[in-house]
Image (tube, rainbow, N blue to C red; front, side, top):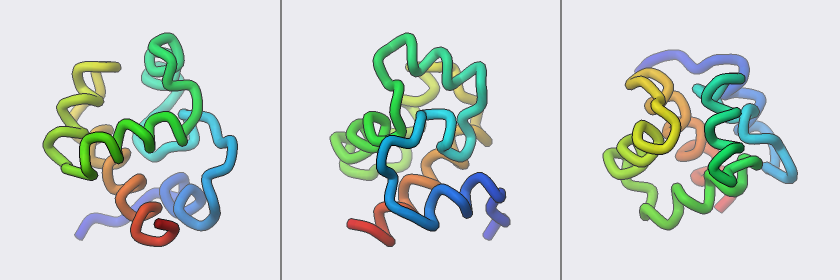
Length: 90
C-alpha cells in the first residue's frame, strides 16, 4: 500500500463541509481550475460524482481524466482520498 500525503490525511480527518475542490488529494491548482470551470468547485460536488459512479475506481478515474486531464497518479490520489473519506463518514 502506498503512503498517503499530508493533504490526504488532512482531508479524511474531518467532515468535508465547504472545502474547495483543491483540498482533494491529487487536485492542485491546474486541475482544480479545470474542475471549477466545469462546475465542480467544491469537494462535495466531486464527491457527488464519485457516488453517482457508485464508488467504482475505474469509472471515477476515467471521469477525472476526461473531465480535467488528471494523470494516473492524480486519479489514484483523488480516488483514494474520497474512498477513505466515505469509509469514515458514510
